Length: 549
Image (cartoon, rainbow, N blue to C red):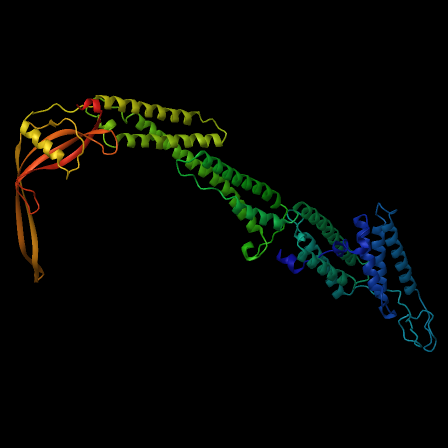
């Protein structure tokens, strides 16, 4: 393309086709003839006897062009008749100019004086030279080179793929170059010389090829329309209809529908862009440029490739985003199904009652079922939004609901079976101590039921605790020496344990509490001594009021 750039040429007819004088021409032959006659008329203006050889050359070229005009199939058309008349008139003018004439005396006024001559002056004409000198060796070399140059340009003109003549700058460059070829060829009026004939043939072939290529470029432009605007619209649509991110699980039916709509729009845009780019790429002439559309440069072939990649990536991202959601849902549902087979499968009347009626057990279980039900419903929503069969997801959602119902049945059975433990002692003193602790307002135990001793007797306990308070620290030779005071407390106490149902302060719900009663005889500075106090108190299972008393 560098050679074509350097020697870019365009047939004058390519532009003259759209000129006013050619607006009514009905075929390419007539349009080319109109361009030729306009050029010949311009070249004929101002001819003088000293330029007789130029007149002969113009006449020779005129005859060749006139012969081509006769090949038109539209000789009855007014445009053909008009240009034909112009040919005949110019031919007659040139033939008259070339006829031999006698030398006029200098003081004799010429009957053919130009209207542009000053009044009183006479134009004289030299005796004609009817013989055109043959080419000399230097001229022949130049003619042959001229033919080779035109052939090179002709052979270098690509007539497949996107036509470079879609570019107005290319058209102007070809136009200028062809004019230079024509002017160079006009310097050799020896039209019967074989080398001149070869050069003329190359000129005609180049002109014809360029004319055909220009027509092909026009057809491509007609198919493309405003290709820059089309590409800009694709770029904008890529941003407007971006691929949505995968939804976080769980999601609502509205979320699923909106995601599918957004993903569908993104895929539609991407597929449309790929279709459009497949039509544009083979026929659009988009020379590379160093800029980008974002900085104001026109789209080029690299942008075509980029837009293709973007469109393919959009389709891939849509599929990947759906794949991520589908895979996440599948994994979660698989995990849920496994947990459904192991969770809350224990006997509600056994020692695992706390799984069903322990503090917060029901709330935690129902939360787990509801969260997993939402995940299963998400799978249902996604399949429905895609107009696909949601049977598997629906089956899982139903399985979760059945498991939830079974849990509630086991919870009710566990509550019905909930009882206070069998007493290990009925010692009145211990019962009185327990009663005293429960009624102590500092503990706010509230309303209680039957006290059950879970210890057979009061036991003695003892432990020692120490605390060191650092008073000073010194460093000698890298060694640290600290000094301080160590305080030791010796804790001694008596204890026993009991169970008791306590009523919740804000409802009629009862829980079994497990309480340790303690009486310290020695301890720390803040230890209550020599009186029974409440130690550790643990909230246990629910119990029905009817099972309390």
